[in-house]
Amino acid sequence: MFRLMFTVFFLALYCDCKILNPVILVPGDGGSQIEAKLNKTTANPFCYFHTEGYYNLWVNQEELFPHTITCFTDNMSNSPGVQTKIPGWGDTKTVEWLDPEHVADILTDGWKSTSYFSSIVNAMVEWGYERNVSVRGAPYDFRKAARNVCSKQQYKSSIARPQHGEPYHIVLPKPPATVMENKFIQSFITLAGVWGGSVKPLILLATGDNMDIPWLWPSQVRQQQRSMPSIAWLMPSDKFWEKDEILVERPGRNYTVNDYEQFFKDINFTDGWYMRQDTANLVRSLIPPGVEVHCLHGYGVPTPGKLVYKGHMWPDIKPNVTMDGGDGTVNIRSLQGCLLWQDLSQTYFLKFIWQWQFDLY
Ligand SMILES: *[C@@H]1O[C@H](CO)[C@@H](O)[C@H](O)[C@H]1NC(C)=O
Ligand SMILES: *[C@@H]1O[C@H](CO)[C@@H](O)[C@H](O)[C@H]1NC(C)=O
Ligand SMILES: *[C@@H]1O[C@H](CO)[C@@H](O)[C@H](O)[C@H]1NC(C)=O
Ligand SMILES: *[C@@H]1O[C@H](CO)[C@@H](O)[C@H](O)[C@H]1NC(C)=O
Ligand SMILES: *[C@@H]1O[C@H](CO)[C@@H](O)[C@H](O)[C@H]1NC(C)=O
Ligand SMILES: *[C@@H]1O[C@H](CO)[C@@H](O)[C@H](O)[C@H]1NC(C)=O
Image 1 (cartoon, rainbow, N blue to C red):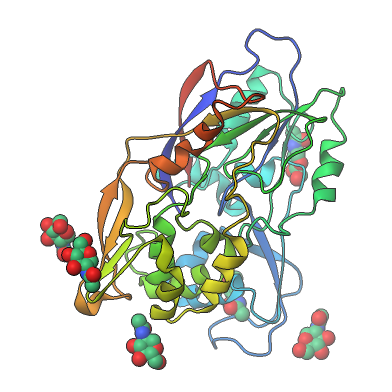
Image 2 (cartoon, rainbow, N blue to C red; image 1 turned 180 degrees about the vertical axis):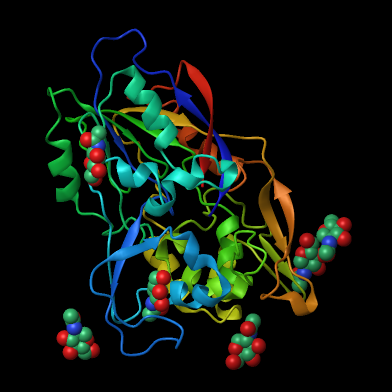
């Protein structure tokens, strides 16, 4: 989920129009900053137990080193004594850059950068948008699934203050959990929407994903990755994968979309099965939002399609991954899930596209 390069197509909206509809940017998994305050009674001896105020927890590149990674995973796992909050509601700053400390470095840091929506916001400002006023961010606690991540009231209160009364455009990478109220919403623009799940989260759940950081073992970050209901939510959906398509193969056992209960038992993480049951239906029915939809995604980047574990490798050592089409993270069939709405009235598809290189740190 981390440091993925993907290409998105961004719509050349409003080029000929005078009115700029305000835009709300809703980030994806990993795309909001998280701050934490600690008051712990137990922790690894290398870790702080107590902090006076809130400090930046995600993304903090200094935490991804061998001696601090266990502190980080502990802090990120909602363990007792860790209080977290999501800074910057309504402003763009915390969704433009994920690591507040590294803004200067990362400008020259290419693909390692923690820039998120910043190039999009910079372009919008050139078109006449104003940060924090007509383009706003809606960061949220991405570790949770869409259930209760942010109250409807919170969204309403920011939606209810459009500057000159023009309806909003909403840009978000995940489909909405509930039908939106279209009175205030002009259009819904999705970038790399995960309509039907993705195979990659199965790696995070079974093995852990060290994000290609060479000194980290996948198992060192697995506990934290397993603790996020949003990862279970992103597992492949049975509406997009056939019941006989093997997602995970290991000696003596194969798993399909219908074997998740057994999969979680076999990786010794039965809580994951409850997380999956709690989240699987959030967008499963794919109800169209009832507003104009623009659905944009990248393609042509090898994307995990099937995981093959050999003997002793299961599940702790990275599997051999058979590639599928997609944007590097999300399988193409899932990215194209919004096409299911194509024939329904009230939804319209993009007319003009620009290609943008957009890197999710
Ligand atoms: C920290 O936790 C201890 C007990 O675990 C509690 O007595 C104390 O009031 C807490 N301090 C703060 C600032 O929350
Ligand atoms: C949480 O992260 C901080 C920030 O670097 C780290 O210093 C601290 O040791 C961690 N705390 C715990 C209890 O893991
Ligand atoms: C937007 O709000 C942030 C605070 O979250 C502030 O630091 C930033 O300067 C504001 N940007 C503008 C252009 O006013
Ligand atoms: C798992 O699937 C592979 C084909 O992908 C097959 O060769 C193997 O026999 C299957 N294993 C089991 C236990 O069914
Ligand atoms: C799960 O736990 C059982 C009992 O502790 C152990 O025998 C088994 O090897 C574990 N399986 C995995 C995949 O870690
Ligand atoms: C991974 O799978 C490919 C294709 O089946 C095979 O050629 C390769 O040897 C495998 N690699 C490992 C490390 O198992």
